[in-house]
Image (cartoon, rainbow, N blue to C red; front, side, top):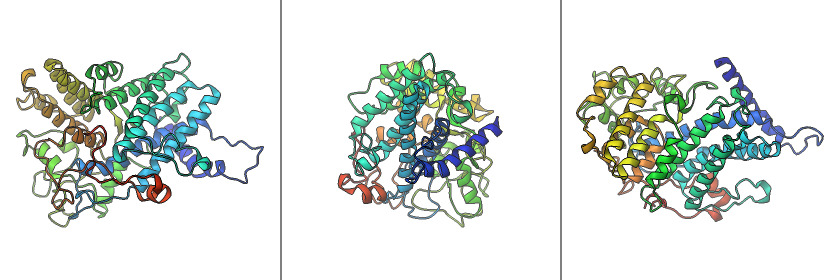
Length: 466
């Protein structure tokens, strides 16, 4: 199966490098086929979606203080202006292919392909809007008919995402959908339409939960979506076969090759090593190695490394660990995350017992997925097993923070909760007097579509973060 998956990746990459060039060739033989194969689009979009989750997290993990720059005053650490043009372009490359896949699938009546396109488009819109706020969508795929697309409003984009997910769920649940997708070309769910339906419900629950600071928040709606989503770790949306390797392994190998990268933030390490909460988290040895001092210590965001960076003075991603080996899964959304969404929804509804049960299940799910041998000892410790009467939103979010390591959703959570996590402080040398709330628009969009780009500040709150 792995050889089949890797072969499909090669085909997808060949399509990206050569197929698109032919597709856009103005001197092309008008009698020749001009339509890229739909299975190639499925392979490309499912594979590149997971990579776009990585590209996003490779920025937001500094804001979430999972990672820290090994150099003092690292731009992401201290909330400096970043040029994320590469990430922005990769988003729209995939979104354009999703637009095309939906168009071609609609012409052929392939409901499952339309459904996958809708689900992945909703995911991309939501991730991009959570970084930049207003973004082009409704006019973004018109090509030469509109080279300067307007930006859609953030709130309208959320409505678009939810509508896309609803449509995707309907189409993927249609009688002809289950055996329609080409399994080897689907790097997330191996061609299972029913698995895609679960993922669509899980993503919808995530997005509805994102509205916790708005009047639109409805815990019952979230719980309804969750009831139709994941039931175990086997349902997780992820990829496990790569063109070369898991990109987090690439970060670890960069570091091992003395191109310093992937240093763990002291906030994250202290939360896991017992310094902050008085309990050692058994997931930490599966993420990184001990330092030369025989302990686990991180790098303070903004301050930079304490030594050379090449002598194990601090912790960083390692190429043989759970998140950062060559074949580690690249996660899109997981069962563990849905249990923490459930815990939050029940907590906000005043149902503490159900919130507590889901909270413990979320911890257990993540530890089981990682293969933690001592999960019961951790979960049964009174610091974690506080009892239903003592469950708090802060405890739920603390454990979600640990279980969603390197996920971009954590930056959304931090903003939704106004960064009220234990010992979460501004980076050393921060250029802002308060925590960052959004990203600046990338240079490529400013240069190409500048008349439509609003002036923004990194302290501006997005519409759901008021």
